[in-house]
Amino acid sequence: MQTNFPQSFLWGAALSSYQAEGGNFNSDWFLWEKTRNITPCGKACGHYERFESDFDIAHSLGLNALRVSFEWARLCPSPDAFDEEVLEHYQRVICALAARGLTPLVNLHHFTNPVWFAERGGWLNAANIDSFLCYTKRIAQVFKEHVAYWLVFNEPFVYAYNGFVRGIWPPGARSYAQARRVIENIASAYISAYQEIKAIYGARISHVSFSKHMRFFAPCPVFSLGLSSLAARVRDAIFNIQFIERLATRGVLDFIAVNYYCKEYVHFGFPAGRECAHQFHRERKNHIGWWMYPEGLYALLLRLRRFRLPVIVTENGSAETDNDAYRDYMQAHIEAVARALRAGVDVRGYLWWALLDNFEWDKGFEYRFGLIHVDYAAMTRTVRPFALDFAGIAKENRVTW
Ligand code: BGC
Image (cartoon, rainbow, N blue to C red):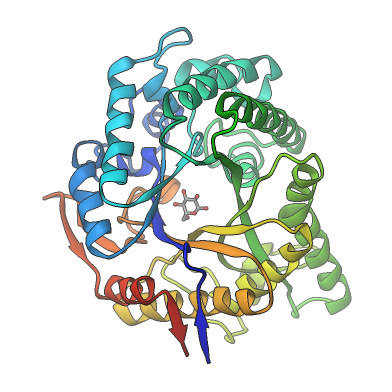
């Protein structure tokens, strides 16, 4: 069967500033790495200096979009200062994308905060929302002629869960109450940021959203199937849908941005999460140990149809150790997008995570997601063979499988 993608479909890849740029000394993650026994981000991919040649490769692959993020801590190293040189750097980044025909999707917050913001209580403190809005307003003013797609936050629930429930990301808290407060503050910040961007853009085109991490929750059959199914439904409603619903109902989502990777088995009780599925080998695990499940992307996209909003897959990808596994994952997930399109979901783009191998937060550099392999010692880049298959699909703008 053949599926033609819409003419202006965005074929691209994503990156985040902290994970790729290197040298983000003013970010709370940088401080966190120093106090914990984890691999530091250090120079990351050296992308801050190499962004032009990295974008050349994206262009040579025939991509037409790239999702990047701006590092707030770099732009605002102290509460009242805006670093004009850094601002010029990001202007050059956006120009470099445009010069290569790459539509920019810009993310304002991808997990990291300025140290001064964290020291003032970060997202736990509602009084801090204004600092984020100051940053947002300045950026929207500067880039209103050049950027149409804004992602205000990346994955608020993942941020709150890892930083405030599991305690494995800064600030290392373990409190559901705090996580809820963080989510509420991020929701308020998002709504105000949306309104500010709209006011600044006036009649100019802007598409504003946030990236939502979605997982396919499946009942773990090792335990009572009835209880596990209930647990999966509850997790799905709370984790996948509620936040989107809340913002869509307020009319502050121009499109739905989905980050999807895998399936997670759930049940009531211990051992928690995907571990319970060890005895079931229906799905393949990737290098990190995530259950690969392309049908999950299809099923979730169908669930989003009722919001009647365009959808962009702003992250989908896998860390593998051999090219066939990357290629199979990529093809199966693009096929899931194609099926969703055929079923009437208004999907407008698909971005692979990531353009380059990069710093994978608490896991360091072992797991590689890139279309492009990075040799961290020499800082050289090599296009992975499966990226050429991806390029072929992007160029044809259709799939036949
Ligand atoms: C995050 C990325 C991360 C990727 C792979 C996404 O949820 O946005 O920052 O590298 O997952 O774990």
